Length: 242
Ligand SMILES: [Zn+2]
Image (cartoon, rainbow, N blue to C red; front, side, top):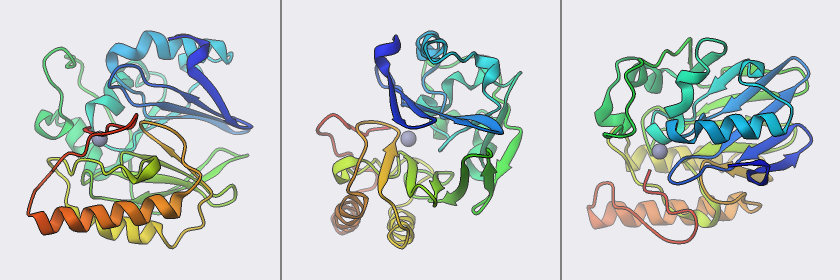
């Protein structure tokens, strides 16, 4: 990974593309603090560090790491930040991370590390993250997992979605702690928000959030009708079996 993996999305917002199956990481440089959204795969950390350097940042410049949910490909590199940054996740994700619940975090041999992840800040829906020049609202959006959140900037109308919403309405797997019914409810609540751009955990930026939400809701209803639990939809660049 190198600077070619870093994209400036908006003034102060960078995407560091995830390699392999790892999630993207997003860096937000605020006037009162710097935030990293998802640390990505443990094995991608050397590239993440290099990408931070390419935007003149070091690991210790990240004040807070917010995990969109508890899956290994989003939290794996937390251990490199947790001694110098606040680690934050929704309480349903924090619980699983703190107890090293590998059934729901999906850690597998080769991904796992022996250092217990620590979550300093257990978030609730409507928690606010105030970085000065950026202010975000935490929206609890269970479905893909129970601890999934979206991070919303109502001023810029942008939404970081983790694995809850992908460009093109690619349906995420409903994972071990998730629920298709919860997923539909979460997407319906997102439908009420003003959103211009979606920054997902995998794949490309979406500039048609309402269209993607509608497609995802329709697919989720079909999943319910089929009686399948956790059926995976694979396709396109945003293969979302995470
Ligand atoms: Zn996931």
